[in-house]
Image (cartoon, rainbow, N blue to C red; front, side):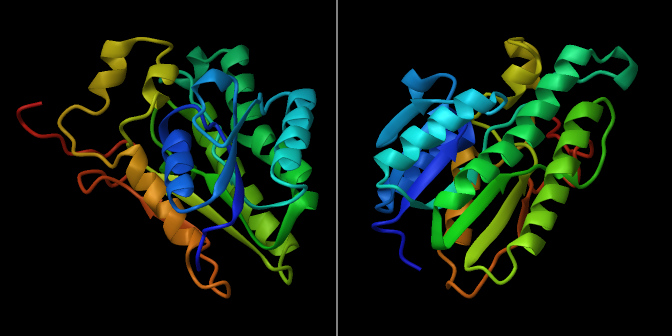
Length: 246
C-alpha cells in the first residue's frame, strides 16, 4: 500500500518515537499534522499545541489539524504517553498516578473519539503501547496499569469498528533509545535515565517508526493487530541481559 498523498495526525510528535515517525511518514510522501505540548519542537507539515489530558486542548488541536489537512485524514497515530517513577506502589503519589493514567489511557481515548468522525474509509488508527501492557515488572504499577488499559481499549475498538474499512494497530515496544522516555520517568535525572540502557543494544525510535510504517503499508485487506518488539537481550520489562563491560 502506497503512502504518498496520504494525510496523518501524530500525537507526542515533538521527540522520540513520535518525531521519528513524523519524519518517516513525510519521507514517504505523507502530509503530517503533529501535536505536542512543546509545539516549537515539532518538525511536521503542520504543528499545533496539544495536551491530550485536556479536553479543550484536544478539541482545539483536532479542529486545527483536520482543517489544515483538508477536512478529513487517513492516519491517526496515538503516540503520546509517559511513565513517572520506578518505585514500589506504596511510594507512588496521586499526582503521578493521575498524570500517567490520564496521558496514556484517557488521552488515547479522547483523541480517538475526537478524530474518528474525520478518518476516511481505508484509514488506519495506531497506538504506542508497551511490553509493560503485556507482562508486569516490579516498581512500575501505574504505568503497567495504564498500558494494560490501553491494550484493552484497542481490543475493544477493533470489535466496535469491525466491518468498517479502518485498520487498527498497536506497537508494543520494550527498551527504546533516542527518546526522552526514561528522562521523563526519572524527572530529569540524566544519570539514572542513561543507566536504563547501559550494556544493551536496544531498538531506537527509528526502529519503532519502521514498525509503524510496516503496518501502514500492508495490503488494505490485511490488519496487523499487534507488533511486539524488544531488544534481543530483553525478554520482558524486567528481564534484561547486560554486557559484562556495562
